[in-house]
Image (cartoon, rainbow, N blue to C red; front, side, top):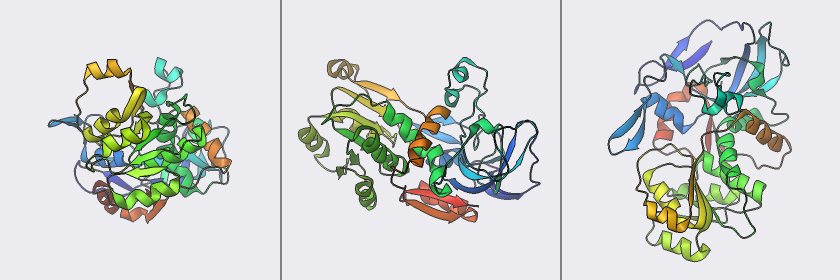
Length: 348
């Protein structure tokens, strides 16, 4: 099998040929059709996440090398272990990659994506930047129905992360303004889901004007540049403050803009992992009675819910940038430089 692996942090992925694994026990082997490229893959390749002020989260201890990246995986079952039930050769499936230990209290509550001893594909186990991937159990395989696999694979992270974050906005009332910060793959998914879940056309804050048309096509009510002079005051004047803001960027400046845009009793959901730091004034949290909530990917149950919505055909397709698997390094570099519009998907 062919795969593209991190062999040294901060270096290009290595092209590796090795024996295709044979599934044992409950394992399932998929022939990978496509794998989405997520911005977190850039951080894993680099080996760190930025905390701002020169501080970093060191990922070199959490991820053992060599490691095949990629967690938005869709493909076809080509072999099953003797104890793998409920799936058969030829099935088209999307992989839920956020696998936990299965035995801790967090996993038992159905929140294995928050497990302290994760077995996530593309980070703790080899992922989908390959032509085959070994999945530990058929329970993490989700049926995409008639959805094109190139679209369905993005549900495993971009879609799931946006879905879990947008669910945290409930309840919303008619006329409530919602702000989506970021017009990349996550933000575009958030705009679509705001309309589907709440009937709300979100306002999008995006500094890259080349992405504005995609946000409007996704259903945004308006698109603004948060760095433009007077942007924050204009947003507050137009809305009276937003009921909820979802920060799909996760930088210090995006957090600050989202927090400042809230009305009293508003909610800020932090999702993105770009990095940096921001100052929060406790007095303002109290006086405005606002809440700040973190949201990290989502659960297997939420992916199943989202896939059911997707199979119904009500969600517009995500704008994709399809590329051959051999372009994995080039795509990561382009994503790092902010040149990807939509979601890049590697085709194996």
